[in-house]
Image (cartoon, rainbow, N blue to C red; front, side, top):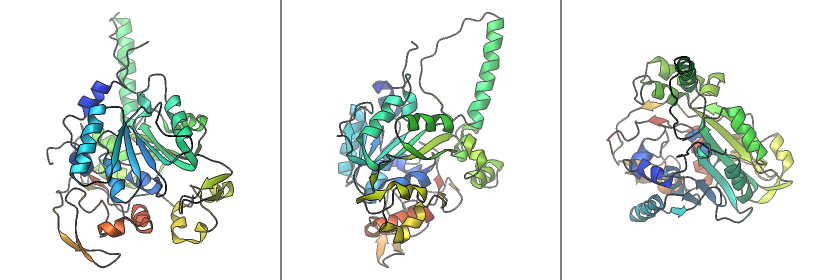
Length: 373
């Protein structure tokens, strides 16, 4: 079997050497999908991010009052993150663990987030997905992403195939490269997730912005305001061309006759609710304002076009749009990536943070590890 480095702890530990928790947070939507991840992360029960690295979503959601833990198999990274979290007054916990054998009981967690992890197993993603299904409770939500066969990757593969043919003709000795990851098209990822037992509510390609970032050598050259890449990616992110975006995404539910309601957390949502909603919603919560955001017909999208490489926002005084009190913006999270003003207390209210995540996300692209932080 080909040598695999996709799950080598030392390689992943060194991967984070030149990055910091602050730099990961403040690149914001360099990797897109925040509109999906923040909308569908449960507000009740425990959520686990499996393969969290420097844990930017663990830290982000902990500021929203969400009960979330980060799991990573790199012991040094877990130690660093727990120490950093404590020193910076975050209510976030990081645990060393293996996504193939998680230390959680059956049916015990409400949310499972896996962002670019399951594609690194040379034997395929099945075991990791089955483990996710095991630990989720009925009605629990799994958010799974992998790299997609984007426009850029398909073009690269075509060039590689031509080169391979030429090398065979000239009897060039093939160099064996170690395995690192797969690229899964949305339909293939959805099939794997479905085979693990999940009800796939959304299976699609996404993140057109990053395709142009890749083609532009991971700079903003092709995505600056006014460029073709900027206009195209902002216009078509929710259309067919996104099926060739940089990432494949699935939002899935652990379906059962009786499930935990996404809106209130109670074990009282029936399967019939999934005919109308993307997640389980009980009959009581169907009457609430929040339920509209989770109707199958309600679009999941950013609240505006991307901001490309804006300056870091210094802490400043503002008035909260929800309670009217004065507050200072966060020195790390800036304005929390929203186009509306929200204080720390209001941010922790589920009704408010769901509304913000469904209506007011301000997508911001900053180059990863750009030396700004």
